[in-house]
Length: 78
Image (cartoon, rainbow, N blue to C red):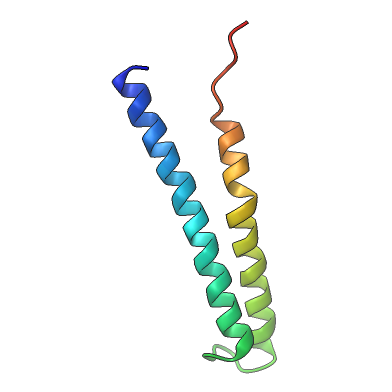
């Protein structure tokens, strides 16, 4: 690997890691909204907003890193 390849791999690893951290943050914020820790629009609207944020967070944590890794996979040489 060249230095350019190493730099690109580090940037991609960082992007995947940040995606997972954002997913965890969304899940935590969603659970806080669901439990009534703070109010945006009042209950029960906050619960539905919290559920939506949790679902987005789970998608960001579980699915997006896989999609990014698949997109960035190195081509196989025969």
